[in-house]
Length: 252
Image (cartoon, rainbow, N blue to C red; front, side, top):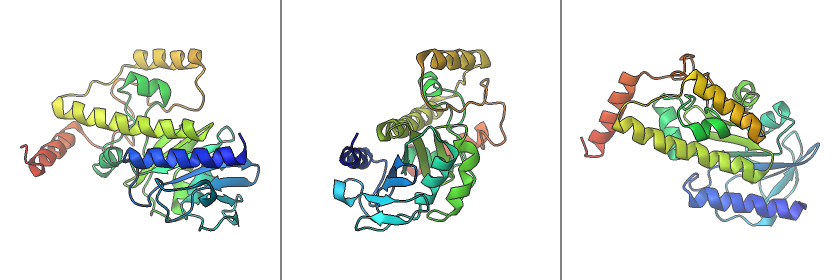
């Protein structure tokens, strides 16, 4: 793809994010690696639903703007950490999917192996330690986990996904929010049935046979035995959270 094609793709992904309520106002950011020391990235303070190709900035690996009229977002350093840790990726997407963030705010991890298609495509979605949004703390908190996965949650902040193309990274973002919505409904209806170790192993083999790119995070199955830090919140805590949510909404 030409640089213009990549700029158009970034704008298209931005519109999709905005239309699907994965970002609000001027939230979120997108970047694509175009060379060893060159990146296209969305500017700070711009609605992702209203971008044009000329709005996209060109920066270097220090986050210094090379060309473009806007300001480099302070969260671009989080993107740079992902690129430094993963030579196999060319795109990073950061958004604020509300249902997935709701799980994070409640202290409920999305890392459990529950939905087969999610486990096979992106695996579980682990949560980082907390970092002040817009600070260089995000540069450090994603490093360990991004080596192991293509999709993660920033504690009480948002999602970060990576991919071999900007669309690859974006579709993983959609997967996170869809999984969060499904799991929330499941928890409201009753007990969530996690996949067994054997089932997770079979999915891993299917993923390998399918030739899927990237890294899929897994805790091993059978109810996510690595409860610290994977699950974060017990079933009883989750039940109280759901009861309170229904009460506030007028359904309890």
